[in-house]
Each structure stands twice: as C-alpha cells, then as structure tokens.
Figure 1 (tube, one colour):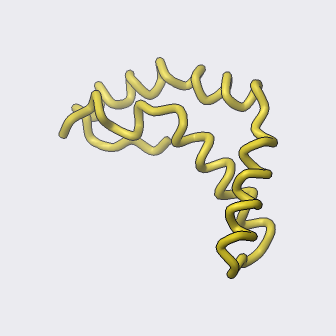
Figure 2: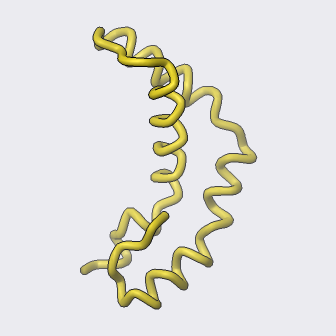
Length: 75
C-alpha cells in the first residue's frame, strides 16, 4: 500500500469517471478517430463546478483512507 500514490487521492479520477459515464451514453464507438473526438468533446464540457466538487471531496477521501489504513476506498 502506498496511499500518497493512491488514485483515491487524485481528483482527476473523478473527472475521468464523469467523462466515461458521458461516453457510455453515446453508445459503442468503434472507430479510434471518432472515440478520440468524443473524448475531447466530453473533456471540453467539464465545468469548473465539476472540478471544484471533485477537489472538495479530498478531506473526506483522506479521512476514509486513514480509517482503512490506506486500503482502497469507494470514491
């Protein structure tokens, strides 16, 4: 276990999850160029509010990791 390197402590993981959920709603994409374009479009749609919400979860994430002695948490 190496909590300082844990993805649980990286707010970008929340942003990637948002992007993945949005991509799923588009349906299956088979062509690489189309997928790249879709990812870029969804990235561009991420709002400052969504970023701030991801960052605001950090104190709770740190507390949860401490409670679990560095084991993965459900974020």
